[in-house]
Length: 233
Image 1: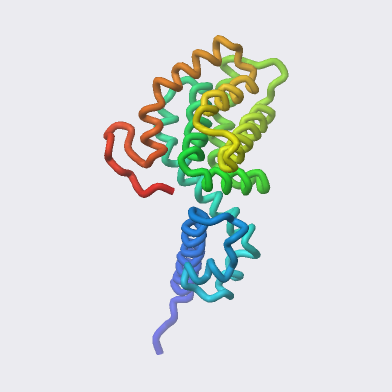
Image 2 (image 1 turned 90 degrees about the vertical axis):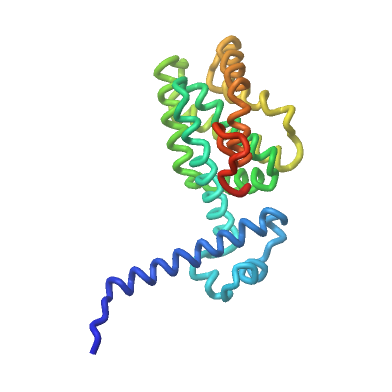
């Protein structure tokens, strides 16, 4: 009788579970890109993912938990895309501005993306943990270089995330548009205590960097115009 490798069987089961979960998340991303979150049902989702309805409940409690997983995936994948560009910038305050600007540009390009990210991230602060951790590091460095009276890193983090998510939600709802982008980034800098001269200097540097950053948002390499990194999210 053949010996059963229980460890390998468990690994295969975990791999299959991960693939099925990814399949559900991918199906949800596709549906949310063309329809509002409220209009998508579990039946729609399992039909799109080609899985049984019971399979959905193996991985998620309801549509809100799935939407949270989709938003987390969207934030993680986009933050990973812009991270090399942001990490190459030595000025921590400019890194904050670059990151916020990239997320706002992405929401302007894809309002449904902005709405979903904002709604889910505000509902669950654990969403986008890696992006928040990177932002916290940038803010910590910025406060070391130019201390703001009464500012802790956590307060700065809450201020930036709060403004950014509100802007993403407003862009998604059509209340803000591209003309408001620089003002929104300026509001972040102001909330961090940046003076008018420092904020103006940072925004000027941001505008000089925008052509490369815009190509990143659009899914292209900043060093090779036209070179597609992947499909739009």
